[in-house]
Amino acid sequence: MDSKLQIISGAYRGRKLVLPDGARPTQNLARGAIFNMLAEILSIGDKIVVWDAFAGSGALGMEILSRYPDSTAVFTDVSVEAIKTIRKNTDGIAANRIRIVNTDAAKVIKNYANDINLVFVDPPYADSGLGIKFVTKLAESVRPGTIVVQEIETNVPYSPDETKWNVLRDKKYGRARFLILRRNGNK
Image (tube, rainbow, N blue to C red; front, side, top):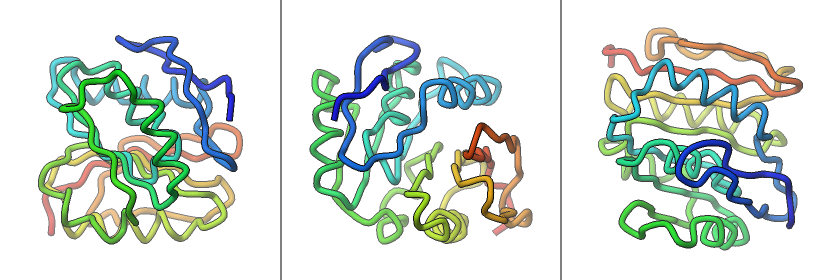
């Protein structure tokens, strides 16, 4: 599907992204706000290994690849159409920087937990509990210091487990709520 979605900064700035049918992408303005918040947490020279867990179009992971030259990304989604879309959107990016997997993110947490240091959690709004359960399960496996950017609808009551996560940011943009969490040192 054609869209106005594009990479907003970095090496791939302006690159147009296609969307899978039925996608609800994080819009350019909200994505810009997320990455402004992340800029206060991440440094341009950081070796970021990002997991775009419910990738859809792959826009969030692509933005990291664009902004952080030493970054690598894993994109997962259960939708075959989403996987095809991510392949189109990442075409031309060095294959050694990306991995695209058609899978249920919740079932492969342990496969990626030791390698990643940033996770985007943006499942479909229709299943608000999916992202909440995912972050709860993720806390059991990721290393301290791992950053999670979680998007949920503003009308969903939710507070992350503060014995596991430090809430660095909690912002609302329209009907979206973004939480930026850091896994603390407690297991």
